[in-house]
Length: 266
Image (cartoon, rainbow, N blue to C red; front, side):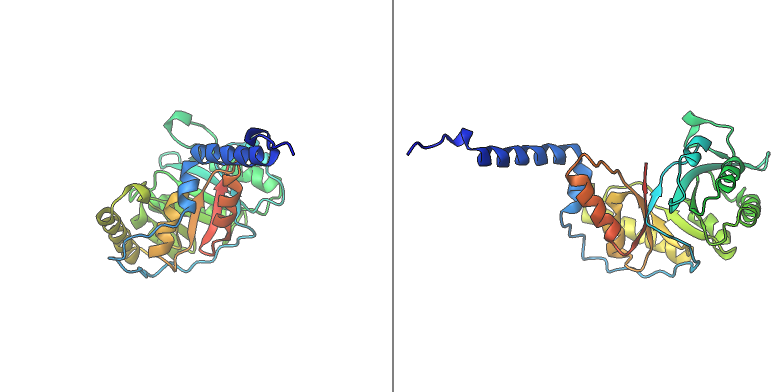
């Protein structure tokens, strides 16, 4: 009986091809691959239980659309869209919110322009506002205008106000808005135990003094945040590469986590 060569055995070749594809996939998606592996964080610091701002938020689904900063992108949403996120800057002199991500994308599109298109399209989606320049100087004027928009566009319990300025979110919580503290950038997989402990104690201290409804951060921060703040509602954003083997598995797991309330995708 003729013995087939190792390299001509279609099953062996098939297994090798799969292994090569998975290896390349891991190299292309190192962040997702790392988060999928079990991670033991420092046991030196116990779980933290700050009081959160108990405001309701109407959510029909966890998958939301990221960076809807143009009317064209708003008009591309369909009626099944659960929610979408916008980046907003408040101009106190003009008493207007302008919608753009950063100074390299300056725009004259206003939040009212987007919400007018939202109303015209008769969408029911909830709205996540990433408030880029919230400060002690503009918080009261901004709140007054957002309250008007909430009433005019029937967005009661359908608006998230997110900011890194946690102390300025207090008045929004008191006014009935669902608020989220945007955690400053850090990568727990590149930190030692002392750094993790210091960062989590700082975050815990801020949350205890300034109750918010949720915490938002990068997807690779979610395992750490859920570990130390088991009662927190978590908001995040991630990539969805459906030509990948890693990405669908990772995103299915992310969406299945009970603490994760919303995941933004492009």
